[in-house]
Structures are given as C-alpha cells and as structure tokens.
Image (cartoon, rainbow, N blue to C red; front, side, top):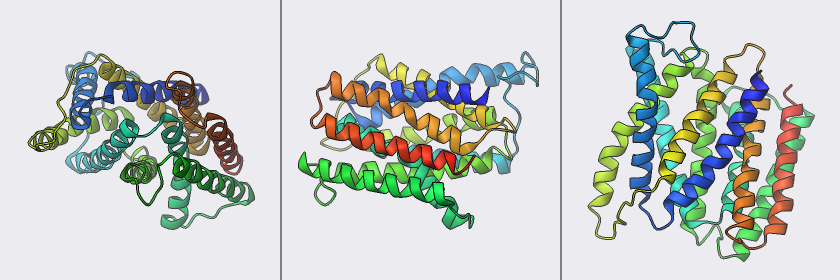
Amino acid sequence: MWILLAILSALCLGCYDVSKKLSLQGNSVAGVLLLSVVCSSLLLAPFLLLSRLGLLSTDSVLYVARVGWSEHVLILLKSVIVLSSWFLGYIAIKNLPLTIVSPVNATRPMWTLLGALLLFGERLNAWQWAGVTVIIFSFFAFSLIGKKEGYGLRDNRYIWCLLLAMFLGAASGLYDKYLMRHIDHNAVQVYYTFYQTLLMIPVFLLMQRRKDAVPTQWRWWIVGISVLLVMSDFFYLLALTYPDSLIAVISTTRRCGVVIPFLYGAIVLHDKNTLSKAVCLGFVLLGMVFLMLGTI
C-alpha cells in the first residue's frame, strides 16, 4: 500500500512543479508563495476543526492529533526550513528552464543520504556508492549544459538559489524522518502549513516595500499549487507511517515525478538542449534506482 501512496505523491509533485511555473510567470515570488500557503491552510483547517470538535474519530486517516508545546517548536523549525527552501526554489523555477530545475531537484535523495552519512554515521554500500557516483556525474553534466545556455554556476544567481533550495529540501527530508517517529503525520502537515502562513505575511510585506517589487496577480494555478502540494505531502507522510515502508524507495519514487515538468518544459515551453538533458535525467533516475537497491 505504501508504494502506491509514494506513486500518487510523485504524480502530484510533478504536476505541482508545472503549476508553480505557470503561477510565477510575470508574478511576484513572495505573493505567489503567500497565496499558496494561505490556500493550503484553508484546505487543511477543516480537518483540524473537525478533529477538535470530535467529529473525526481518532482512528480516522484524516484525524489531526493534539501535540504539546515542544512538538510545536519542532514543527515550527520544519516550517522555517521548508519555507526557506520553497522561497529560493520559487525564484529558481521562475527564472530557469524547467528542464534544468526538475532534474537538479531530483538529486535531493542523494544529498539526504550523504547528510545521513555525515550526521548519523551511516555507511554506504556498493549500490549506494554507485548511485552517488552516477548522480554526481549527471550533476556535473547538467552544469555543463546549463553553462552552455548561460546558466553557469559562477555568474548566475538563480542557479545558486536552486542549489540552496535543493540542499534545504534534503535537510527537510532528514528532519522528516525524525519527526515521523515522534509526532502524528497529520499534525505535522497541518501545523507546519499554518506556521508557514504566519511566517510569510511579514516576508511578503517587507518584499512589497521594495521599489522594484513585482505586483502580485491572482491566478487559479496558485490553487493548483496548494491542492497538489497538500495531496502530495499527505500521501508521502502517510506512506512513512507504515512499519514496513522504506524511506529510500519512497524518496526515489517521489523524485520520478520530475519527468512530468521535464516533459512540459521540453514539449510546451520548447526548452533548449532537451535531448542532452533527457540523457542526464535518465542517469539521475538510474542513480536513484541504485540508491534504492542499496537500501532495501
């Protein structure tokens, strides 16, 4: 059952990236991010309310458990990490081709694995080292293609935004593994979304005071961002609660969703060098499979 949940999460995640690209074209990054987290909060608020009113039983898959102050602090920290990753990621996806952004984001499980190696003293086996090697090779190849298109690491700040967003996303993945062992997954999803809204309000107001601030335009794709993200996170966090679930398999499966925005960028947006990027993406996914084989 958990592998089906991971596949559903991957499909939602892929469509979520396309929705972000459509929402951000000629639009304010801070404004789109604020509106999307507000919409997500509105989608999740009824489940919290129904849980507190006793209209949802404690054994319901939608029930939001009560958490203490110490748990709220941990969830708030997740909100800060994820919101920082999203803000930088939104800047990158607005200004870079999807055929560059999507494959680079697909390498997050590798960075999560390396983080576990450094922080938790985990050791990599032969399959995992093979996966890391293949992905690093693909990462280097993408950097050459990006440089050819004018998106070099040295002279393009949006590439740096993409890389920082990716590393923060990997850190969030490590943190999720810890949180799911101690806090109800629905409580994490609901409260960290609420906290993101509270954090984004002052950020948005501060950004709007800039002289070069881009006005915020409402687009229905913003609702798509919220709905798809809520669904993807729900399937992902629920999958992690299964005792026999494997985080490596779940992370790898979720990242396969990058094929959707890649195809959109190649077919609809007519991004350049799509054949070369498709080969690199294939190697990234192959590396993900090696990581999975090394963990199961």
